[in-house]
Length: 157
Image 1 (cartoon, helix red, strand yellow):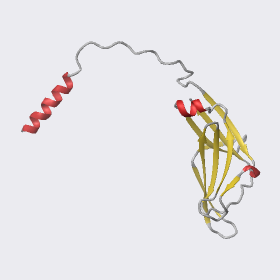
Image 2 (spheres, rainbow, N blue to C red; image 1 turned 135 degrees about the horizontal axis):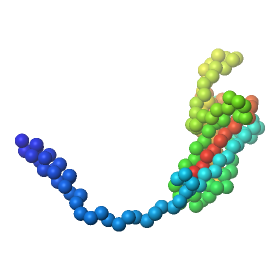
Image 3 (cartoon, rainbow, N blue to C red; image 1 turned 135 degrees about the vertical axis):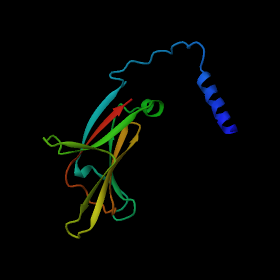
Image 4 (tube, rainbow, N blue to C red; image 1 turned 30 degrees about the vertical axis):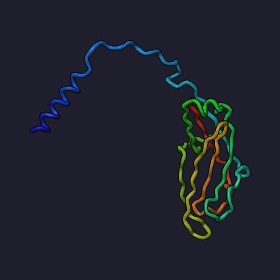
């Protein structure tokens, strides 16, 4: 019974505690286009020869990476502002059936020679002024992509 009375008193206090005049309205926020202050998009086409290996092929943690520059991702934006950066892998670029996949993304396949199954992970890292695209094979055997990879990056700040 004491619990019921306690809960009832607590509920009553909660519902009646917010009485009094409404305070003044706060200052207006900054105007932005559609609620976004700034937005920039990049399309990066990475050729097979641009991928830099990290580590030795077959060793644990080996992968490929490519660094691209984003001038708008300044130290001020990176360290002092809130920003969002989305990365997409674009497939069938400039074709009628083009589509984009949000990163990170895993793709799966089977080696035609050995029959072994594998996966490749596409992801990215961000640093002031740069975006770094990573390609990691599940077996850490580094075989350069044979075709161009197209990425779309969208930065909001």
